[in-house]
Image 1 (spheres, rainbow, N blue to C red):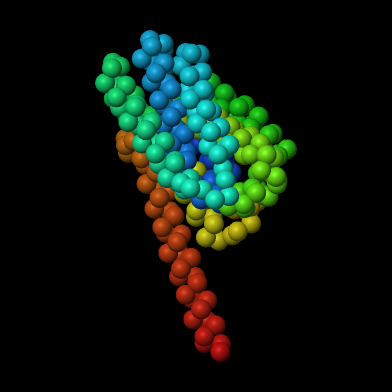
Image 2: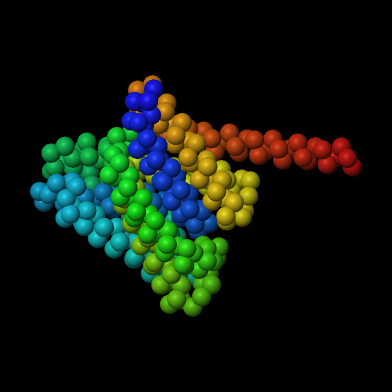
Length: 282
C-alpha cells in the first residue's frame, strides 16, 4: 500500500498543479468563447518539437524546447495582436485552421522521423502516471511565476475576458494586456502537454470550468469549484488507471466528461424541482 502511494504521489501532485492552473485559464477561455485554442497551441508546440527531432536533436534538449516555445509564442502573439471589434473571420475559425495546419504538418514530418507516429500518439494521450518529481517541481516553479504575473495584472485580464467583443481599454493597451495573457497561457500549455497530453490538458481546461459555471458566475468561486472538480477527476482517474491497468489520460478525460453531463442533469433537475415548488406555492 505504501509503495503504491509513493509511486502515485508525483502524478497526483502534478494533476493537482495542472488542475489549478488550467482551471484558472479555463475561466478566461470559456468567457472569451475560444474553446479550442489550447488544442491549437498544443499542436503548434508539438510541431516545433518535431522539427527539432527532424533536425536531429533529442526530445528533451534545449534546442527542441526552444523551437517549441518559438513556434507557440509566435502563433499566440499573432492571435493576441489581431483582435478586432469586428472580426471578418471568427476567432474560432482561425483557431481551427491553425490546429489543422499544425496537425497536418506534424503528420507529414512524422513520416520522416523514426518513431514519429509514436510521438504524435504520446503528445495526444500523454502519460501522467510516469511523471517524475523533477518534472513536478519544474512545472510548479514555472506556474508560480505565471501566477505572480496574473496576480499583478489579473484584474485587467478578467475585465478583457468579461468583454470579449469589445475593448475595455484603448486598442493599444488592450492588445498589450492580451499579448501578456496569451504568452503566459502559451507557456503553460507548452509545459503542460508533455506531462498530461493534449486531451488531458484540454479537458482540465474546459470541463471543470464548464461544470462550475452551471452553479456560479462569480470568478473566484468558479475557479475554486472548477479546481476541486479537476482535482477529484484527476486523482480518481489516476487511481483507476493504475489499479485497472488502463491508460491514465483517457481515464481522466472520460471521468471529467461524464462529470460535466451528470452535473448538468443535476442542475436541470434542481431547476425543475424549484419551478414545481414555486407553482405549488402559487
